[in-house]
Structure formats: structure tokens, C-alpha cells
Amino acid sequence: MKSIFPYNEKIVKEGGAFVKPDGEFIMACYNHEGYARDYCDGYYAKILEAAKKGEKFPSFPTFEDIKKIYGYEGNLEDIDIYLSSNLTKEQLKLYKLWLELNRDNEKLNSRLASEFLIRILSWDKIDTIAKNEIVTSSPNPYYIYWNYYLMGFDIINSNPLTFNNLGNLFKESLSEEYLALRKKDNLLKEEADEIKAKCKRKNIEEFFRK
Image (tube, rainbow, N blue to C red; front, side):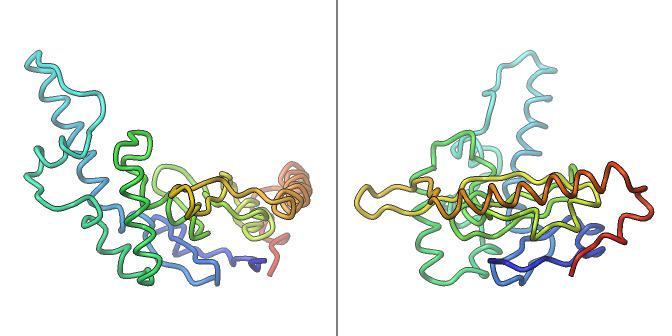
């Protein structure tokens, strides 16, 4: 079980971080998805431009659309150099397979790397760009991020995935032990909610845990 992750002002102020299972963290959770973010920004700019001219444009970018917009010639897995540098060879091999299996999944199009890290490698994502939230597949996020939850962060649970060699696919992995830990962790959420309801924000750090 992961230990409590200390509240880190630098992470909060500088856009967030990815937290590995051993507690090591990598600043700026969006760095590895920089290309994805850039192509979305460019794509929506193209939508606005097309709208002004009365032209039609696809509602969401496919990888072929991305190539046309940026003149990009590489493969999809090549866009994540930052992510690749933080994975082992085996993890990178699994990541490339993940990309191949989800290449046409529009719902995941700009979140492929994040979903892989969170749901398959059990990394957690602290995001402070759009809003303060933590996305995790851990069964006990309210224990780990107790201090963050007290400070107003939302915690988003994503079910973990494991790779099935026989079916050559990724499947949700919810063991009885996992579900029991999640149920127990919800009691901590209730405890934290009571504290937040009764305590003034300026005094909330008195209830931090180490």
C-alpha cells in the first residue's frame, strides 16, 4: 500500500505532477502530452478558421487529421519521448501495444499516455491546470492524498487495467481485495468531509497527516 503523499506547494503551483507507486514524482504532468495538447489547440484553431469561412471540419481530430495539420510524418508512439524516457523497456513495449489497440479510440485520443500511466502502471496524476484534481487507480486514494483532499482537491477513481496475453487486450482488474480496500478508504473520505465541514480553510492544515 502506498504511503501518504506529502502536500507539495511546488506541485500545486506549477501545474501538477505524476506520482509513481514508490512515491517518486515527475513535475508537470502535461509535459509528456505536450504534443497532444498542441495538436488539439491547433485543431480547434482550424475549426474556428473553417467556421468563419463557412467550411465544414471533422468534430474531433483523428491521427490522420493531426498529420495533415502539422505535416507530421512519424508514428503515433513517437510523440511521447518524454514519457518513454521514464519507462522501462518492458513498460515501453506494453505502452506501444496499448497505442496500437487504442489507435482509433476517439474518446482516448488526447489521453492515451495518461490512461496508460494511471490505469496500467498505477501512477497517479495530480492536475492543477484546469482544476485541482487527482486521477488515480489506487484503491486507497483518500489515505494517500488525505492532505490534498482536505485542501479541496477532487479525487477521480479510474479502475485499473491488466494485460491479458491470451486475448491480447487490456481488461479491468477489480479483485475482492481491491474492492475491500476501496470500501475501507471511503470511510476516510467521510471523515475528511466532516473535518472540511466543521473547520475553517485557514486552519485545515492542522489536520494534515504524515
